Length: 253
Image 1 (cartoon, one colour):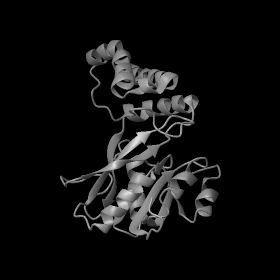
Image 2: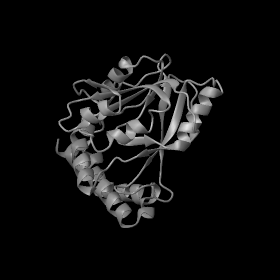
Image 3: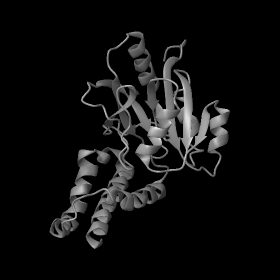
Image 4: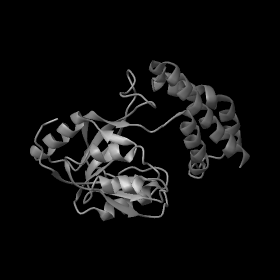
């Protein structure tokens, strides 16, 4: 990354809860390019607040009402129109920071910039070979679009505007361990099920039969967890299992 950087007119906001082991890395990855960093916390009981303040970022409590509402609250706290959103378990690479700097230096005409969010396995330093990334708008002008109000799906509503796709990556340490992955997927079952409209019992019965093998193919082959050796295999099995468990939950309710 360039040695001398002038901070950009960007506010970065991060939602968090009990992220003492990851929040410092997230803040450090953006602090040299943005004017302000605001962490929206929903009730941490660990050392998250102390770490945030040690990094000279703002710490604001807000009761949890879902992903969308929490991020919209974060948007309202930011002084700049240009916003950068990352999660507490994510961090910007030097390459994408250089790309963001170039965007502002070139006086671009876009209001929405999509980034590749690329997962990293627990205790891995870099993504696995051919790791599947997903694109999402993380840098945007809030005058032209904001996060949706959905409690589950936190995406920026772009209102048919054009998106510029950045080439480089945000790294995503979403899982601390396999035990953490299991607890995380279990907590999603009820939350996601409330937002699924298709509860036709016949369709659900058929999905009970086919959901696990199809989900395993999706995660292991299509999303290329097969490149992650035994870690990739176990990850795909866990993700497919909880997709199947969600269908079971819907069928019983």
